[in-house]
Image (cartoon, rainbow, N blue to C red; front, top):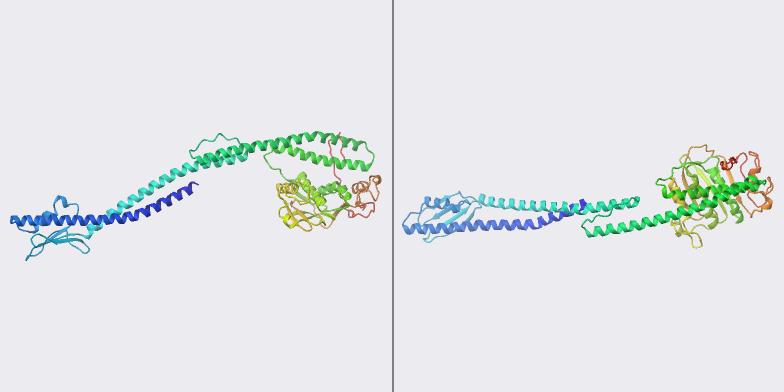
Length: 499
């Protein structure tokens, strides 16, 4: 700002000096020329008068007389030459030698004589140079005054603007600022007052929203704790394996929900972003398959998950689980047919692709699908899920993109972490078919049992299939020899360690 004010003022002053100085200089030179000619005419009249007086007294007209005129005190400010031509006599001259381009004033006297006054060209140039010096000095003085005024004005305007900028930056960090000191510039003072009022309103709104989120999250922890204790009791007392397995899955879901609630409580007090760690995608996706299998079976749909034996990435387990759950839920709610979750990776990056066989996404909506409050015409959601999912992925240094509109294919791009990646052997985890009947879940080796129950009842490495269906026993299963990892449960409930 200060530099722009200086530049504008300097350019304005320079233009003014040029536009006024050049005509003023030309006029000044013309005035100088007129003054010299007037001086020559005055000397001419004085010489004619002196000659007339000497002739009347009978005194001779000679060079000494003319030299007296040249050296008169009234004529010492200019150099000139006087020449008198008397009738029948030789010209008589006195003063500075004549040259080319001299200023000359000539005229007749009272006794048929001719008087000529000549001002040398050097005297004319001297007068002109003096005029130019005065013009240049005046221009530089005006230019200096303009720069001084520009510096003062720039400082007067830029200092309050700098203070206003610092105040706006401080408002974004939430730091308390002292009251605004009036700058003397009404426009800046008005902006500062409005900014302070807006900042106060924004802080009040943010504090209210933060307090609401913290209060709601705090109130949610009490029923979650009670529910968790009830499920622990069921897990400890029930003798049926499928009941214990469902209780275990429910406890894991409560753990994730509790983690989300704790994040909401701690978010207002946290000023730093989370630090990503190493996350094993196989465990995350296996858990998501167990969680969403009943919903897909109830919708007569199929969920297939394909993940390498080891697929480690840099990220955060909780947020990444929420992102995958959002994409699977989005496919269940708005997609159709078979939903497939596939993991592709190399040494640098890992991609989780979620796709289905539904109608896809309207191309006009596809460009805005990650914007908040944007959803399809038949959607009943809030339009926040995909926008929040993209934010969670970006916080861990990844990206969430819409790879294809028809069929709808989403890709979660993550940074690969060191791990044993056996890319030639993949574990397939599928769920789908008819709604599951609880009466058929009692048998540990039943072909119609749930995927999780079948896994729990099968010996590792026995080549058993992970049930996916409606009692047909034909669901896709884990490849022979590909043992799903056993996951530890909560280790601080009554001193138990649960597999």
